[in-house]
Length: 332
Image (cartoon, rainbow, N blue to C red; front, side):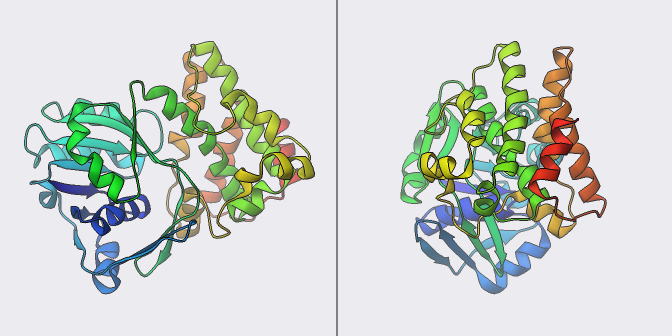
């Protein structure tokens, strides 16, 4: 059973590396920069629970042809690259191969499905954060298991994911799970604009209230659209804004698990801004704005977060204090 990780950046190197460390046959496909880095250093994988794994020999390729013989393809490209990745895979994959989208956002699975009619395309979700520390080192800083659309095609791979320490949780309906993850990912721009590690950001009420405001707006739109987010945390989605808005001392007492985050944990959006890359804001908060437009409504708070991230992408990376950010959002 050959597995290809297509678009192997932070998430791809971590998930694929764990699979390889567990004995799976994995080929990574991605950019030359990471290919050179992994060729020199191998993969070093750590997590917040203390796991410390080294995969010294890694096959990291840079052309689509490397995925040609894969039975299972894990797509981990940034959302803006999904259509191109699908077209590249369509030119090399055998009919019947299984393709899983492990990407942020809502619609990537649909894009892959449209362009890969001869393959089994499934939608998945990675709930945890991975920090690229450089030199082939990738760190999982928050908890979570892999979620994926339920399908018999996954059965041959269940044991491999379990051995990797990343068991698959399969769902009959994946859309509610995707929206539940997106509700959590609404913190990505808040974290990126704070320029703080996740734990330090979430320890400050003003940042949490900014996050909660984006969630509250989104939950109202989801209710209007008849979508009920799945329960992917100990606290149901509709109660999260109230929990996040509590004073610091109460939040620390009642939500200690939310603060039980590795001190190194950061969001991928923060990483993208630091590297001067375009972020995935269009596929996170942008999905909320598109949902609002489909309902004939507006989403001013999420729209403002998009504007602020766009400014940061243009070079204005000055950290925004929590009270300032909250004022900007609530006056939007």
